[in-house]
Image (tube, rainbow, N blue to C red; front, side, top):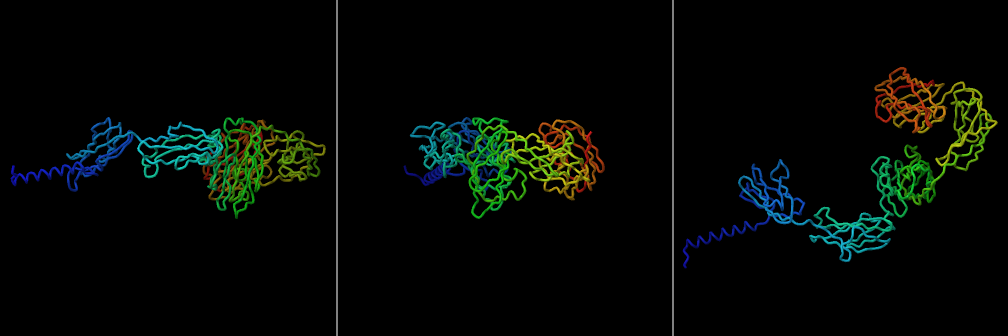
Length: 612
C-alpha cells in the first residue's frame, strides 16, 4: 500500500521516540529524571555489594525536596539514610545473594538503581592443590610452597608476621629462618586488586618447639616498663625515654641493642625479661644470674663508662666480651638491666656512653643460698682502725663501726681499713667500746655479726657536734641525719648540737620533692615516742604540709598516714615509732605521693627531735 506524506511523518516520529527510549534504557553513569539545572539524579545506575557489606548512594538535583529511598526486595538489600540530617545520602546493605531495585523519590520524580548482592570474597591457601590446615610444622631452614586463590580472581600478595622466624616470597615459598618459633603467613589481595580491605587467609608456621628464637624486641609503653614486660613471659622487651635505641632484636639467645644517638647517652633505658612458667623460677627464691655481654663502640665514638644496674646490682661493662654476675630475689622479672648508674638518677659523668652496640647472651639463673659474711677482726688505736677481713675479695662493700656505752649504742660511722674513725657525728662525749660489722656487696651475702676486740676503745671529745647533711637516696648512717631532694629544689641542710637547719633558697620554687631522713640507734622492732619540733621562717607558708613517716622504708613498718599542717613559727608534732630496718624518721615536705604544698617558697626551717 502506498504511504501518504502524513504516514511517512508519523513513522518518522515513532522511530525517533523509539530511539530515545532505547537511549534512556542503555545510558551509563548517573541515572536521572528531569532536565536542566534541576535534574534529579543518583550517582550510579547499578551497584555491586557483598553480603554483609555496604555501599553509599548519593542523590542530587532535588532542590529543597526531601529524598525518599526504598528497596524492592529487603530480603536481598536494605536501604536507609546514611544520616538523619541529610536525605540525599543512603546506605545500601547486602542481605542475601540476588538483585534488588533501589528507588529514590523527590518532588514527584523517581530514579532507580539496580543492586546486585554477591557472596563475600574469600581467599583459600593450598599446598599441592589441597587446602592447608590452620597450622603447619617446619624444621629449621625447611621450605614449603604455598598457593592461594581469590573467589573473585584478584591477584595475591604474601606477607610474614616475622621475617626473623620465617620469610615468604612473592610466589608463596615459605622458608624457616630460626631454629624455633611461630610466624603467621598471610595471603591477601595485592596491588590494584587490594580493594577488599582486610580480606585475607592465614596459616601459622611452627618451627621446632614453637618458642620464638628470633624476634624484634618490642618497646613497652609504660614508664619503667616492668609491669608490661611481666605480661609477656618468654619475650624480651625494653623501655626508654629518649629514643636512644635505633634497633632492638632477639635472635637465637642473644639480645642486641644498637645505640645510634649521635652523642646522647644510655640514661633512662631498661631491658626486661620475664620467664615462662616452664622455666621453673620460684617467687621469693634467691638466684644467681650470670650473663655474657659484648660492648662495641661505633667508629668515632668512645665512652668513659659502661655502668649498668642488673637486678639491683651495679656493674661496669667493659669493651669487648665480658662475663658478669648479679644476685636477686625473684619476683616476676628475671632479668632487669638499667643502663646508667643505679637505674634512676646517676651523676652525669656516669652516663656518657654514646653510640655503641650491646649484646646480651647466655643468661642463666641458678638458685643460690645466702652466705653470712665472717666477722672481721680489728683493733683501734688513736681512733684509727686496722681491719683483718676474713671474707673473699669483692664480697664486702663497706665496714661499719658502732660505738657503745656498755650495751647502749651512741653512734656509728662507715670506715675502711687503716682509716681514722669520724666521731664528729657522735652526740655523746666519753670513752666507748667499738664493734665492727662487714656489710655485703649484694643480697648474696648477709652482713657479718658484730666483731669485738680487746683493744677497741674510742675516746670522743667533741665540743660541738656539727656537720653538713649528706645527700642520700637510701638509708642514712645510724645516729645521723641526711636528706634527698630533686634537682630543681635548691636546698641545704646542717646539723648542730641536736638541731637540723634546712634552708630553701629557690625564691620561685617550692618545698615539694624534698625529704629529711634520720636513722636512730634503736634495734629494729623497738617502739617509742618522738616529739618533733619544726620551726618555720618562710616568706610564704601557703598550704604548708609535711608527711611524717615513722619506720622509714622498711616494708613491714611503712606508713605515711601522718600528714600535718605547718604554720610560721613553732610546730610541735608527736608520733609513735616502731623502729624499722631503714630510716627511723622521714619528713616529706608536702603530702607524700601528691603534688601539693608547692606554693611554699624560700625560707628556713629548724627541726629537733626528743624521745619520750
